[in-house]
Length: 432
Ligand SMILES: Cc1cc2nc3c(=O)[nH]c(=O)nc-3n(C[C@H](O)[C@H](O)[C@H](O)COP(=O)(O)OP(=O)(O)OC[C@H]3O[C@@H](n4cnc5c(N)ncnc54)[C@H](O)[C@@H]3O)c2cc1C
Image (cartoon, rainbow, N blue to C red; front, side, top):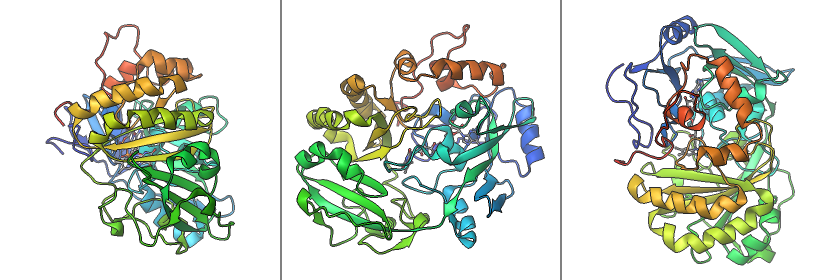
């Protein structure tokens, strides 16, 4: 395939001179990877920066044969890494098995989500990569390599920004399928959110607070496992919603998963958006910062002060919680976190100074950016935040000595001794 390939938000045009290849078998994938000087996998293209870019060949697994091997006794599935969450959820249905958690929308590929540390919400859930037991990679020479949980490099391999090879299959932990009810509460006062942030984020299996950071406009989305106790939020001053909502007020609620407490399958409630519908607004950029949970309330206060500054470019924001995990580059590595997500207007020039100012305000909390969203945090700051940063740099050198899977973002974050200083490719294209 030739022609300009863009990401989902159309703020990035990939620089791949070799175009986009769509192999239809593992052999063909190995041949494409092994024959390329520079190559990189493209998932669903939902990232907002150049994390998926390459100057060489992009390869998509979208035409690879569907692989879903469920081991019902062991409660695991070995699945094509290019499958979307929606495809995997549908394949698991007949087995009565489920993943522990899902992101806001099931449109991403598994490998694309794991590569960037993508997460859902819930005090007990680490990034989605915590479900991975094994990852099967096509390496730079076109060979195959499997890295399993417990192997020394495993925690550096799953969330690796696509820089260690093309994942063609993953094996995941499953659990018995469960039902979830979604309860939205409106008009939560800011002082209650700030004072009781931990209690509120812990009040259901998965909790999200949506807001424009103004007035008393915080809406709490509780995703409660059917049968778990229903928290009484009467004390908060928030009112149970009497109609269904879209996270962005004014957009059609029909795109959102069912609310108003109607019980339904886990995969039809844990994401905010239905699989067959446009998620979010489509014309947007996104950023997200994860801070230690203990600093969540102080970060809310700092961001409230910035509101007049970022409000003109904000569509909606979401606050959620993620548990600590052990993946070296997971933004939740080693610490329970609160995530502050921002859906911006699609105007990179207007968003860039806002992102820079926000990063300044969140710096005292050691904020870590989401790898798939717009950010500008300097590599030395990130290196100071991640305990295993240098171990990942070493893994990169060992697993990809020729730099086949490297791109401008990886060079920027993990320069080799001979790299000239590179401009920041995590920022969005100025022309967007
Ligand atoms: C509407 C919307 C909602 C979002 N909601 C959430 C959310 O709830 N939580 C959250 O944390 N994030 C969220 N994101 C961000 C999103 O989860 C990440 O950007 C994710 O990486 C997208 O997955 P993808 O399949 O589109 O991967 P891409 O963006 O295509 O690629 C991401 C990275 O994965 C690598 N990669 C892809 N496939 C492979 C492979 N087979 N092998 C090796 N590397 C590979 C790429 O090279 C790249 O480095 C959202 C984004 C959008 C657009």
